[in-house]
Image (cartoon, helix red, strand yellow):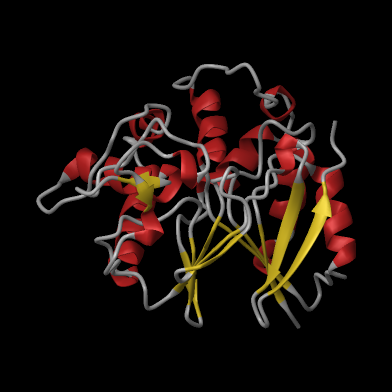
Length: 268
């Protein structure tokens, strides 16, 4: 029995199937952790969603910003983007069931000294605090304010976590950390416009995991989201978005021994 964490799939179902063969994934024995962004940009988002939903408890999936974009499109609060490849999902006969399933996925998974999120955690969060916040945001996402909260994902706001937040502002900022965080400035504020490699970050902006005395350092954190960072191990994190949707590769990390497996992208 093995547990594999897999980076952002983005609808690249053909590459995913090749990677699963490479790691000899056995759904009767093995488990998968998927770091979010199951959908969009690649050509087979519907197949990825159906496959993932059928895995049941053999897979743990956290929600990514592109998953929220799909939910936003369906709710009418997000506009179509140039590289969207979501129409097949939105027009599918089982669309409602798939989106209902997707919306019940968590924002953070924690197990045996590891934690998985899509993008990151604000440096002032301990993993205990992040876990509490994740459950709080998840409850909001299943309530009447969900469309407003999902809509906020689309906006490039330089969010900053500090004490005293409440209500929608609190969960909006927390969700930004889980779903969109890459770099922060010296005040802990997101550099919201930046998505490139760390060496090109605006002056004063550094990866969220590089902040000295980051409070989540006691746990190994696996995440995706940052394709320009690529495969990255160090500073208590494992970054697994290796740009499959950009023609690069899809990556799996075997949690048990930290061995890495990669499959070149086959999607055009």
